[in-house]
Image (cartoon, rainbow, N blue to C red; front, top):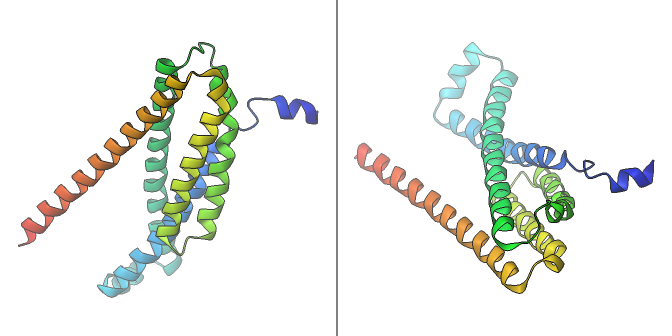
Length: 189
């Protein structure tokens, strides 16, 4: 039984979902505290207390934030999986998906990172660093696991494909946020 569990490829299939839940909870808890603090600062919280109980407000805000973060992390997971499959299509000779299965056990890095994010929910910077570290460690673990089946050009191609995509994606997000911020500030003034 124990030997069968070690060799079962489906044993770690739940890790991405639990990792997304853990990271979402960590970020939602932190942002929920900030939102409640701002609601109190602007005097809105007192008015909300006349309509709802305190724990209902906290749960509602926390759950909505959890859903937003869950959708964001799920979208990042979808992009990451698509990019990994596309890079494997271009740079590996594996047509059976054996190489993908070899790197699946790296999901433990994200699971551990998610647990660490829950523990470090007092600092959003630390949670971002934990997420970035888990992502980098997983990527290099994945490359290490599949490197014996790829050529040097294939490994370099995978690294640069991921690097260019994520750098471009990050720059696009930053550009969009800055444009929205500038539009918002110009509308106020």
